Image (cartoon, rainbow, N blue to C red; front, top):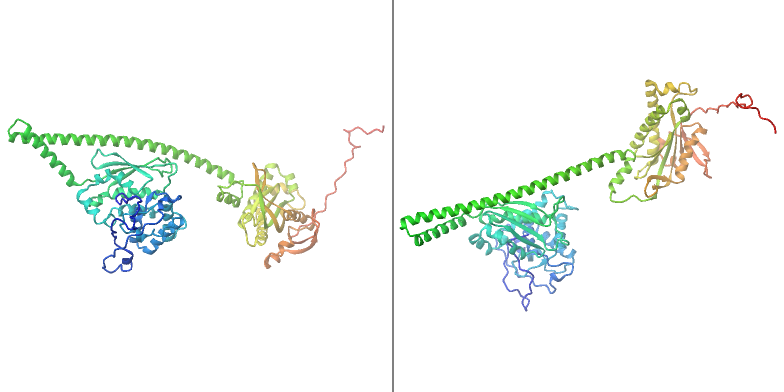
Length: 617
């Protein structure tokens, strides 16, 4: 919003196509851009021809903002070192993007003080803002609201009231005969000359040096603007006293349309400024002369007595007026302070509720995340706007099944609490091994575990990562057995087991195509992998029992392994697995002594004293 650069609304040109006023050129014209270091006078450019089809009649681009209102911003960009041709290019690009085909829209034509103005829509303003960040500053997205580049619109408000923008005629007139208070009081008129979507109201001018300005959209249900427009208005309000060399006005933004917590239906600004001392002195002199004139001609006393009485009357009247001003200001400030206290109380309660909600969500997230693999949790966080859906997609992955060897004996020898502790220790160590090799643990299956490498996230070389994970798990089980041998507990309870009291595991690995996705119902689902590859991995894990091995690797996985891992396993030939007609090439690691099944003694029912002998009927 440029308050003083008040362009005229769109108007028709003369019949011969010429404008009814001469053009006036700002400094740094297109010709002078090529001679920035020479003290040459700026050439005067001819006025731009009036377009055959007025821009304000475009259905998608109604006349909302005068394009000359943007001149201070574009002028500031040039002052900051950006090339005038680049600025001109983004102006034309913005016009092309929003469908304004008028070739006269350019930065160069803007800098002419032509009475025929160009009006654009808010869409054009937004597109121009986006192009400034993308083309001039190389930003793919708009920066956050606290980024210092947004203050450029505030600086543009200061630039709007410079002599270069106001012109060599209007600026001296304002400086000689105007005042800050006059500018603020006439702001509704100035705004209406460059803006058709906002209405300005001056709420209070009873106190010298203080004014309250309200700006509301005429159609709040359809009006949308960026917060940079608000910054630009603040800059204009601050810079009004600069015309007379006074210090910057203090602007307090009490209501804002862009407030993310409590958006208002208006932007309201309380402006405190320094008035011209010459104007105050002139008012005082006029008041003294008026009181002296009245006392000299209307008070029946000698002149030497009536003049002091007139002076006293003036002082009493001026003191009473100042007292009323201060009292009014005090009451307004009191009301404003009460409103601020109520507002901050409300915001404090809102922040407290939000903090409690955030704390609850954090605790819920912490508790729920323990049930979800980290890789899946990250995917859910990145896609929090999308609802999970049933279904999956094909992908190549390596499946690993592991389970604790001799778990039945373990459960027999230990009480349930000890059994659970042993399982948790094993699973905790295995999960760390899997995650350290970029795998994902999908399920705990009693004494077993299902892990996948290559899903849900892509993982180059996933067969090698899976086998390396199993190598690590072999060392992990050795470390756990050493720990248990020192602490006792499980080892002492298993000492009666004839073969060994050490705990081990079996593993099966297979690589192939799976369907990875959500399985279950719309109200309860889980991430799963489905397919023949999963079944083969499970059968290979069971095959270790008959082979007397620790880890069984399929030929499909072995073919994708690097040479060092191929040497880690040895071939075991072709084997048929349950549920599959084709044989599987098997490579295995480790050996376990095969234990012959124990012969169970058959109980004789005849010898039992509790069961009566059977009689033939």
